[in-house]
Amino acid sequence: MALGFSSSLSLFFVLVVFNLVSGKKVLEDGYEVTTVVDGHKSGLNPYTIHALPGSSNLIVLDSSGSTFYTTSFPLSVDSVINRFAGDGTSGYLDGKAGNSKFNKPRGFAIDAKGNVYVADKGNNVIRKISSSGYVTTIAGGISKDIGHRDGPAQNATFSNDFEITFVPQRCCLLVSDHGNEMVRQINLKEEDCLKSSHSNLGTYSLWSIGIALSCFLGVAIGFAASPYIIRHTGRSQPPLVHHDMEASPNQIGGTSSDLLLLR
Image (cartoon, rainbow, N blue to C red):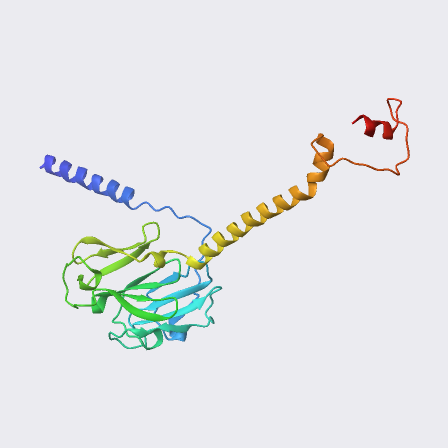
């Protein structure tokens, strides 16, 4: 009996110590929480929000309303919120962003050019909202079936629970396919990963023009300075004959005319 009581007491002590250790909290001061978007006033239910690269604009996903919105910093409860894509009803329709339809998407990713890739969970597809405001389907468009099929992206199938992440270093999307317990990869087009092919071309052109101008200026300066260089380096030059030159004394006791005759 005493042994049983001792064992119970030991177990109780172990549980108390475990709870004290596992329940330890470390509170760090210096942070503050404020409400900057109030869905009750704006009429949307924000599910996910991401910032556009190189911009103060934000994209907000209202999953329950199947609609994307845009707003910008600084945020406040009076911030202006505009509809970006989706018409407020569930469905499946590509085309102009304002007329498109999504089916309760649960996440999205943004590339460096501002293209938005949507994990359209309800339609089992991955959609793209281009920076110009046009919606297309890039993966899973042939079949809306749930499954696991790799290959050409339009023939692929996914589970009904997945998220996506943009990886700029690899120019690809990674799909966290929860339902299939897999990570899938979609290689994007090269132009989707470059900030601007025109800017790169412009940089190259400016660099080329700079090199050409440097060469031209170098040649021009060379021609302009060549008479000065020839006179001071003793290189060949046309004979100088000045018949009306006045004789002038020089350091070795002769005259300029004598020097010319000696040469």
